[in-house]
Length: 437
Image 1 (spheres, rainbow, N blue to C red):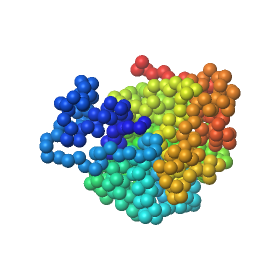
Image 2: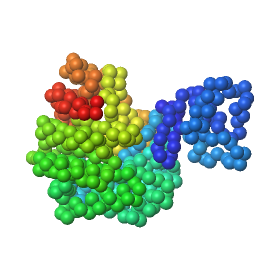
Image 3: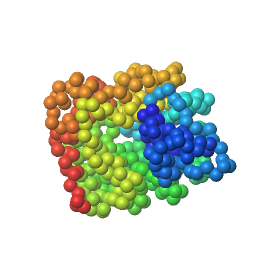
Image 4: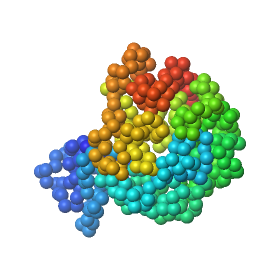
């Protein structure tokens, strides 16, 4: 995407073709659109821009601000950086892939963090997702958020356990004019403390969710389950309805970090059965919130198009990008290592990835192992995997996820066995029926 218009307040991106770009660059308060330089097609584009609120008619008083001018960056488009601002945490979660209680990845100084933000600005990064560890353990978290806001970098989400989010934090976000959604980890009614390795915190997390929502912020709840906690899903579903969350995401932990060699992991058959029961309740209740059920199903709430996640099935071809997300997004560890996504944390690939403390983002995004992974196509995977090349389900599963393939098999170019089982064993089809059809 060589050209785009970006709303830095909400992170929305509008891709521009050459003609649209020409019109938008001309909206500088000085150009006369009644000249011969503009044909009717240009004026139609201008009319649409006005309708969409991208431009407005010049009154003769304003001047363009610096951020409204076209900014060039010699790098492919970067939509989001998911940024782990600290490797420390106040909990001891059984499934932490970053092993945060040990502080394995450390924490950079504020000065070093500001230099990373300068790199984001230089590369025209549209938005960041703040995570950790626990991001609110940083005493300077508000200062970092303020600097991102000053640089016109949108803060899309904040991932937190919720326990350290104060009213002062929420007030400051409002004062800065930003409204990120909060993704709060809650691992089930009666089982949260067990999964989080800390006693006496469950009710405090629930109160935090309610308080953040009351302050006007959207909350997405993320739930990790295993054999010991899976039976809490029914009660947790009722709680999600009761407190009115925007979205609920359920998953099983990946075999990395603290979760390595676990004895309580659910099999895909067990997971499918339990999640299908939740899916049926969600349908019967007319889809009260957006929901994501592992790798089996995801959908928005019944009457909220903004929350729709993946209603349409993806159809993969050999020319498809292996992972569209990795082409436009990345995951920055607390020590400055840049990964394609969180799925590569604590894998053999981690040591092969570039450090933004040593090289600049605009360079590694164009030329590094990270770049090579982002530019993989499905054909690259098929060339290395005869089974997938001959499989009738390839168009639907696309050989799965590279990070999952690496963790499960040790081969980043192999098939993802989890996705393979989900499709071949018919788990996906259990979630296709809807009583509303």
